[in-house]
Image (cartoon, rainbow, N blue to C red; front, side, top):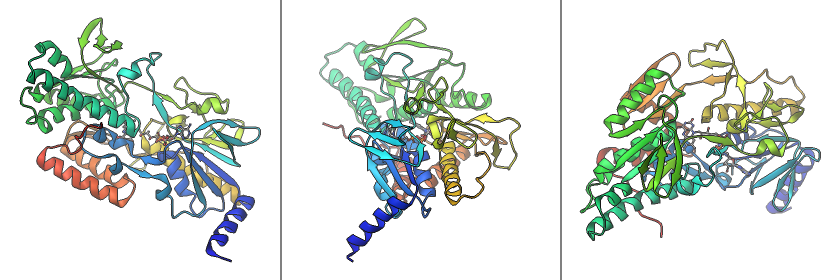
Length: 442
Ligand SMILES: Cc1cc2nc3c(=O)[nH]c(=O)nc-3n(C[C@H](O)[C@H](O)[C@H](O)COP(=O)(O)OP(=O)(O)OC[C@H]3O[C@@H](n4cnc5c(N)ncnc54)[C@H](O)[C@@H]3O)c2cc1C
C-alpha cells in the first residue's frame, strides 16, 4: 500500500469509527478546544469562514501601523498541521439541523456527534447599522486595513489641501479630527495609540500640516473610561489619556454619525474619521440551534457549557453566556459565580474544558465537575509604555503593568516566528518611535 493510500484508508476508518466533533470557529475558544483534542479518539472538523486564527488583542497595533497582518495571525491549517485527527474546512456556517445533527455550509452539510459553537461576536451599532459604513469597528484583519487606510488618508488629504492652499482651516481641522466611540479596552487602546502615532510617528512626515495638532476625541456613554475596571484604574487610565492629549468625554452619548462627523449631547462635532468601539453582539449561533440567549445574543449554557436539552452541543467563548465560579491567581475561590467577560482567557479555558469533557464522555468515564474560571485578571494598555492591571488581589498601573501586558501577549501569540517578529517590531518602535506599516493600499 502506498503512503497516500495508507493515509486515505486511515482517514476513512477514522471517520467511520470515531465520534465526530465539529468545531465552528477557529478563534481562541475553537482553536484551544481543537488543540486539546489532539490524540483523542475522535475525528475533529474545525470550520471557519476565515482561513486564519487572529490574535485580536494586538489588532489595534495592525490598525495603527505598528504590526503587519501576518505578525498577529496564522493560517489555521498550518497551526494544526501536526494534529492528525483534525480536518480544517474553510467555509461559512449558515445553520445547524439539530435533529439530523448536521452543520449547514453553503454547499453541503457536515455531520457531527458533538458540536462546539465558538463563533465569537460582531459589532453592535444599536439599531443603526448604517453607521457601520462610516464608523468601522475593529474585528478582522480587513477592518484593521480599512482603519489604517482611513487614518493615513485623512492626514494625506489634509496635507494636500494645505499644500495647494485649497481649503480653509476648518476643513483641515475636520480631517485631523479622529473620533472614537466607546472607551472600553479597544477604544482606549486605539485612542492612545492614535495620539502617539500623530504626536510621534507622523510628526515629521508632513510639510504643510502639523500632524501633532490632530485631535483625538474619545466618547463614552458610561460615567468613566474602562467601565469594567475598578474605578481607581479608570481614573488613572483617563489621566494618562489626557496626558497624551486625548480629549475624553464620559457620560456622553453619541446619537448620530454621518459623513460630516458626529452629534454628541446634541452638539455637532465635525470629524472625517469616526471609529466604533462601543458594543458587541454575539454571532447568530443561538438562532441556528433555536436556543435561549441573553440580550446580547449569547447562548445561555449549563454549568458544563452544554446547551440545555442538547448535551451534545456546547457553546463557548464570546458567543456563550457562561456563569461560573472563579479562582484568582492566589487560588482564592469567588463567593458568587460571575458572568464570564468577553475576553480571550474564558474562551481559551472553556475550549480546553469542553475538549476534556468530550474525552471523558467518549471514554465512558465520569465527566469532570462544572466549569470554573481561573481568573488571571485584566490588563489594558494606554499608550506605548503604560498600562493598567487588575490582578483582583493587586491593582497597579504604569510601566510595570505594561511589562506584564507585553510578556503575556508575547506568550500567547501563536507560533514562534510571530513572537520573534513582534518582539523585534516592538523593540524598534520603542527605540525609534516610528510606525512601519504606513503604505496605503491602492
Ligand atoms: C479589537 C479587539 C481587541 C481585543 N483585545 C483583547 C485583549 O487585549 N485581551 C483579551 O483577553 N481579549 C481581547 N479581545 C477579546 C477577545 O479577542 C475575544 O474575547 C476572543 O477572541 C473570544 O474568542 P472566541 O473564540 O469566542 O471568538 P473569536 O476569537 O472571535 O473567534 C470566532 C471565530 O469564529 C469564526 N466565525 C464566526 N462566524 C462564523 C461562521 N458563521 N462560520 C464559520 N466561522 C465563523 C470567525 O471567523 C472567528 O475566527 C479583543 C477583541 C477585539 C475585537
